[in-house]
Image 1 (cartoon, rainbow, N blue to C red):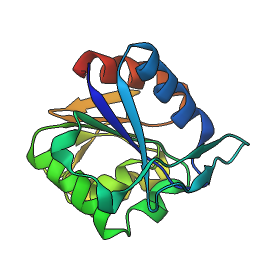
Image 2 (cartoon, rainbow, N blue to C red):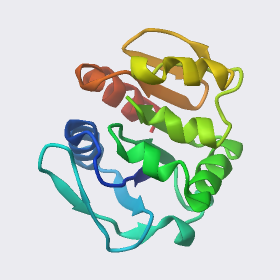
Image 3 (tube, rainbow, N blue to C red):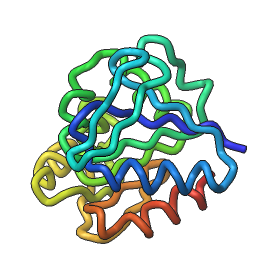
Amino acid sequence: MAKVAFLLASYYEDSEMVNPYNAIREAGHETTIIGLEKDSVCNGKNGTSYTTELSASEVKAADYDAIVIPGGGAPEALRVNEDIVRFVKEANQQGKVIAGICHGPQVMISADILKGKEATSYIGIRDDVKLAGANFKDEEVVVGENIITSRTPKDEPAFIREILAKL
């Protein structure tokens, strides 16, 4: 089964973490929650919380098959961390699946991996996605090579379906 890294910081959109995380685990894949620091409690906007298992400085892209980046406010904190950006950039260079929903593509923008790829996002960062060189599409889920993106919590079923199909 696949090894899937979830990148997380506080103020994530709860359902965008909970639903993909549970679906991927239920499908038998191994998950690891990676954050800015190890053993850090990350609180969602609506009351859920997870504890990070590893810090971004401890991980290598070669050890994972996929990365999932939930949205909300968390990607803003993640994208300014050099180790998070390095991890995502390395994963992309290795052709690993990188999936982001809502504001998740902000981390992809900072890792400079959207140029020439098809992508979508929350409308509030649509222009940022375009300026990063992506071909923006306003669709529930967009698969551009190894990159999977979705817009909002209502798109989660399609987002999860495409992640599981790639794994």
